[in-house]
Length: 428
Image (cartoon, rainbow, N blue to C red; front, side, top):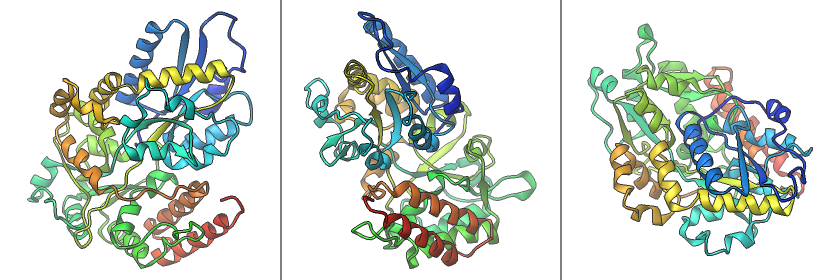
């Protein structure tokens, strides 16, 4: 998820005292916990509404909400810095691919006993979510979001260019052709966009192209980078051709991810994203369509990122309060409310059986395509503590290539060499 997101810095959060040391609550008073939510726009409003409902119904627990970092991409470094002091939250919204890093930190709570509580309904979460929240048998958080990447397209721009809506069997050549035809330099309209700001947002969209072409990110033993294979070069080469030759790719260097705003304003033909942007598109009154990713030789593999609400230890009372809050927040009824507000996919099977689920499907045209597309999410990003560093090296390679400062092979080979050095560090 992915990834929407806000502007309160870690330093500002520290100044608020959001991560107050353990024992700061008055004896007998409510247990006070802080959540770094990493949401913005519709999602931020929805989580704030739900927290208010929880606080009203649970006078013995007081949940305070903060954003945590400028973007969800920035949450891990902000949290890592905060964990060196007492100014860290009780709960943080974090990407599932970061779970191995977090599990190694002694301040990360072990929630395994709580997951066994029948009230949690752990088996009701999808298997991929349970896997993303568990490291070597240790449960470190509750599932927060399950998503996948699709292509959103502007129906009016495609029609204006005389282009039919993408068909289920479309290819990356089709994608490139549509992007080129919908680009109009005079009006500042681009076919699509790609992030070059250096975060995971730049990288996770590349992996489906690599996987579809038979490549992978790391070797099976996760000791060597293999993303610089022919498949990786082909994937990055496609993007380079769109950026340099076709000039159909808007290069988004803003941490605030301006690409989405371009799509909302009708100046972007296609946008690689997921269900998390649907509420914003509806607010902007975009006439959009949804298609699964283009395919390679009939393979339409996508990328999915189950995210977690991870809990951190201050004292036992606060860990218990955090588990109580997350049990409530991730219950089917609260999740359906969240889904209606945000367009998120159901994190529990039981949600699909609630009476209001059909209303949710009606509210978000195209959500069925995204839900069905979960079947195309066959692999996950490597579950290694070194993945964030690997991702950063690849993000730099992408930026250098799309800016015309390096060719795909050169950039990926350099990133692979750096990744191999990082992977060789003991304990990776």
